[in-house]
View 1 (cartoon, rainbow, N blue to C red):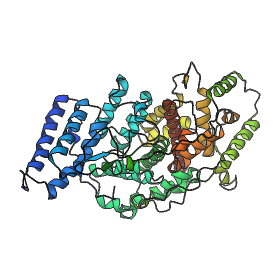
View 2 (cartoon, rainbow, N blue to C red):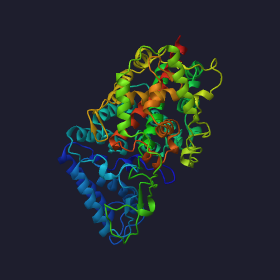
View 3 (cartoon, rainbow, N blue to C red):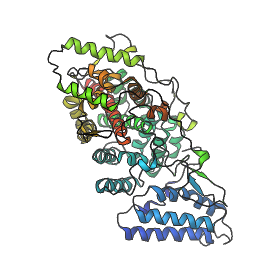
Length: 541
């Protein structure tokens, strides 16, 4: 957004005609695009320009769409569209010397994972390819988040279904409000990737561009979400029924409140995934491409080296090896926990909680750019360790047995925002239970104990205790570096570096690291919603 001028709705929709399953339709629409481009180059149409030079409005129009063609030449799941866009770019390079021809600034959808190891847009896996096509048709792009989730098609299917419902399905909030809320939520973690995506979607939904100048230009109804958005993102245990009451007295219906809470939590958590997997800027967005001189040769396979750099990996502590981890998982599976008292479980929880507070992450995050700070009034408000919250009497530990997702949150979400609870529940279960019974290059591995430890550790960071879980397992399964990584991705994702990613789970495959990040996304999302929906219930009592 905004370091460059905002594009119009008409401009953003120029290549949307190619989002069609029917190849014949795509071919017909691409021919229309070619005729339009020819008219700009050859000087017919209005205004008329000389055929030996493109200038003024024609040059601006054509230049504006070249990054779209570049994106489609790489990230479209339809091979015919990729090939046609590639040919068009090469043709423009030779015919229109005045044009600046862009190249990718990054090699692939992740700066942490090499492009060769990411699921390709033309994957031979039928289910994944079908989902890539569905995502492309839904969103008019195959975005980098979807490509990384392509490692796990079962989860991706659930994710796409849920996000489609949140942004375009039934619900009381109008489409432009939904995307503006997404921008506000992503702003809490300075997630320019998501902000840029939803600024475009906001414009496509007919949103008022003046709102994008800053939060103070948005309607008061949306401004009223600021406080609860801030708290939900960083210290959800501070949410009280008074926050819900303030919204309902300010022209928010309860259904609108619940939808807004789910949207905010969704995009806070998705920001964690974006940073945790090193998601790169979309090719057509600012920062996703850079320009060569007009006389240089266009090449789809090379990126501008000056625009991209990767941090060197560190040889630091490699943490638990897979063999050690497997042995510990096997031991935990065989142990009987019947003799552990409730008091001992509480003590184990408090130990893990205190140890988490001792883990130091990067002390300072980046300062928000102006394009982000216009939606974030107090960036210094960030996560604070739950054990530092004050007295136990003021903010007690959240006991999941008193208010759980299964028994309370699920039904409340469905009650006020039809189907949302069911969609979220499916997504939670998919991320938590997903397993291929492998770990690194080992097969027939039961990873239940590891997955359980990751999920419950995130809830512990948020002050949520499960009485039926032995938190001693957390220290058995998660070494200190991995705890630091989990804490950073969950609480301070904007501070994560490639070095952090490389230094944990060294023997894991990239697909397994992505799965861990999916669990971080979903466990965080569920934790935020537990606090938010409990406040809704308390308000309704």
